[in-house]
Image 1 (tube, rainbow, N blue to C red):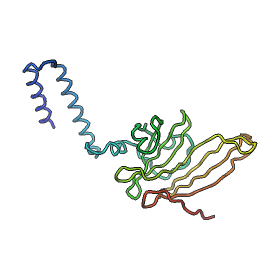
Image 2 (cartoon, rainbow, N blue to C red):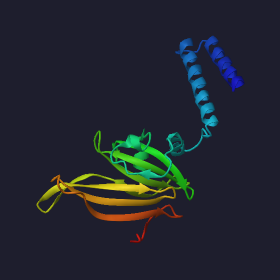
Image 3 (tube, helix red, strand yellow):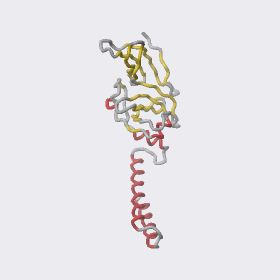
Image 4 (cartoon, one colour):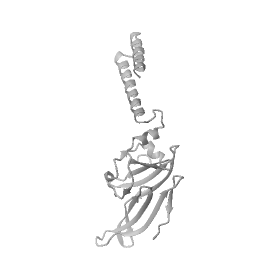
Length: 212
């Protein structure tokens, strides 16, 4: 790499000495500095096991913090789940979100050779919709499952909100529970339904029968 850098310096010096029109010595010094920084980034990528010519989505996935299993429900408290990173707009659109959506993400352990990512769609500064996404080896989205969302809802004359709780085991058995909480504080949350899923060999969230 040092030989390559010295060769570039020699070329630049030659160009400056030849009196290149419209370009100052400072310009070429800046160009050399940019090349040197690019080479440093490339060296860091190789050290981290990231191929410089890897697809952009692969490079982005490799920058995410890995969140280990199991995972218990944390509501909107993302800090309890992991160090979520901002998601570039082009990644969000690739995964089926709208342009401009405020997204955060953390990587999950892979399963059946599929990448798994936990995505948080920020509805505002504190409320999030949390989902799991599977991505195949060609970096194409396969399936997704909503784990948590809280919404205002009216049931008859009763006002309140629905919310979800979830649990993900170490072998990716995902249990999701839906509740309704009345604004009347004396009433306890009402369980509406409970479903269980597993990620199958095709990367799909397959619903399981819950044995009572």
